[in-house]
Image 1 (tube, rainbow over the protein chains, first blue to last red):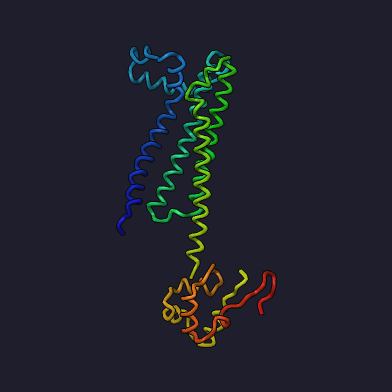
Image 2: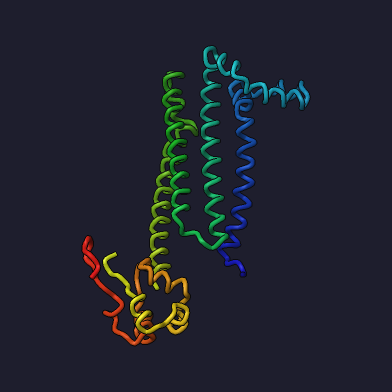
Length: 191
Length: 73
């Protein structure tokens, strides 16, 4: 059966979502190392003076629990907080992307109006709210740690309302899909 | 649901199997089975008309209202 225009678009979107999901997983692995570069002031010395192997070893070693404990109890608290924040956001965005892929799969099959899609969108909304909460907690921590209003002027502050609105949108879509599934069932059971 | 479909009774009276009725009414056996087993949510008048014509009966012969919690007569 020939695919409709929407299904062709869904196929392209699915490819993009899968690519983004894979990049998300790779970025998750690199988060603590990149956060260390950011907090430590760029890390250009490490890039220039070491081989690719040492570079990769750095990204693997920084996952060691002892380094995290030392950071949390010593002067690396901002690195620990940033890494935890980015890791939690990264896990949530991976879940959101996976739910999006599942919705696109049903569109490709030609059966989008199901209760399962309503559940997928509800999961995505929960993840959006978690990101918003994490951003709010990091904002509060930043205000207390730096004793200034500087954190209010960063991208982190924008995450709070943006992901809260995204969560609300996903909840609305979830309710819409649930209603559509019920209407479809009524239609299917009308003889 | 409060509306019960008594297709079995009329089909037995007219000695008509499910397949033959489905063919005369022009719906699938699966859909007719859904109707017969009271799983349907709604019935179109066109379908009801076709069933009554095929079984030579009135709608009241195949549809029965059973109040919630009441026993089937």
